[in-house]
Amino acid sequence: MLELKNICFTKDNQEILKNINLKLLDDKFYVITGPNGSGKSTLAKIIMGIEKPTSGTVLFDNIDITNKTITERANMRIGFAFQQPAVFKGITVYDLLKISIKKDITKVEACNILSKVGLCALNYIDREVNSSLSGGELKRIELATILARKPVLSIFDEPEAGIDLWSFNNLIEVFKQLEEDSKGITLIISHQERILDIADKIILLENGMIKEVGDKSILKDIFSCPKGGELCE
Amino acid sequence: MSSLLDKIINNKIEEADSYNIRENGKTIKRKENEYIKIVNKEDSKGIDIYVKENTLFGIIDIPVIISESRIKDVVYNDFHIGKNANIIIVAGCGIHNIKHKTSEHDGIHRFYLGKNSKVRYVEKHYGEGSGNKVFNPITEAYLEEGSTLNIETVQIKGVDKTTRITKANLKENATLTINEKLYTEEKQYAKTDFIVNLNGENASAHVTSRSVATENSYQEFTSDVIGNNKSFAHISCDAIIKDNAQVKAIPTIYAKDASANLIHEAAIGKIAGQQLTKLMTLGLTLKEAEKMIIEGFLK
Image 1 (tube, chains in turn blue, yellow):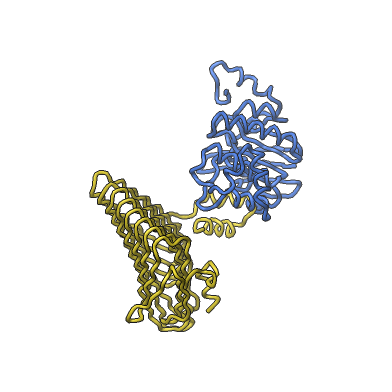
Image 2: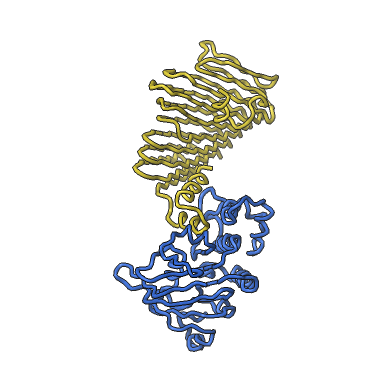
């Protein structure tokens, strides 16, 4: 279980998050949604330790992890998929998968992980994770590094951002599978209705505050908006 | 001697088709075959290596070991590659210097590539011990029509001062590829100059330098590529800088023909924070993440 207590975050004299209180239960699939600038990514980064909250506490399985480093949280099996995956020079997909799993795996094992995210493994395994890969390819490799770790808490920051329609359809399948297989907590930041559709619970964030938590019906006003709002597809 | 040899030569030297081992200024062991001849220069300051035309997949090792302090070893190695030959030359130099005097190796390598020949030249410099270790290699290459020279140079730590000069002249359809990997630390100084003349039609040069400068070290990269004909060049200098190190890149590309297509890219910067964060989310510590990024970069 993940519990956020009174989380506040201020940067450059601007209040990004205001007193966030949230409990996420095991084996559940959560989606955080909300307008741009509502603090969704910041909240995800606070859970991973990439940002430190100005005040408040983060509890993971009843352990206070507020002051733990990114590495310590990763070793507690918290996984984080970035909105814009990092690119490297000289580091291959195989290298990244090996450190994700934390042991020497064979290329066949690495290929099995890649095929889960819809990549034809043999074409990618020895490729460098650099900018010659497309946005969709990088995104799927990013997902593979998270799936390989079998996290207890998986966080995905806007997995749909920057990918084409074809890659997106594959992505939805990956998340559907994840939802069926997952034993831990899955937390996705997304604007996409098809991702919202598979959520057990939706958390609506606005102006750095939780406006509502519930099923998709909490968004009915937004999805019925004829002109389309921030959340309309 | 064998441990130094292992540091600079990746293959098993006994399995090479031919080799010449030079230690403290003298040849101590040599192997030749009917296709590859090694001949001493008259003043014993080096060797001429003759590769017969059409020789395929030959491997030549020419390691140099300096284990005595206060030695300045200047050696001239000339490679005469027959047409259509396809060979690999592995040249490493290791200095073990535990004294306070300077040990220096200046290797002057000249390559004469015959028509349509292919050469892969691998050079590794390695130094150990607290004494001053200096390398000043000069490489000159003359590429005949359709020939290919692929140069890989590696200098990872242990070398206090190095000035490397590489000059190449290319005739039509000749190709030059240079991959340089460099890591400096402490107060080390490394300077690299590439001077390439693309004289023939469709001659091309691809120079990639990847370096990491740490602590108080200094690196300087100069490239001077001249397109005298319809030709192509891509020069890329990419450096990671840390601590109080300094890196200077001076690119010069000079097209003397309207059909010459010359590109230079240079980037100097710290390790990107996003790369470190990503690897930490996979369970590496900051130090482990940094090490992996640098090792990958120089791989």
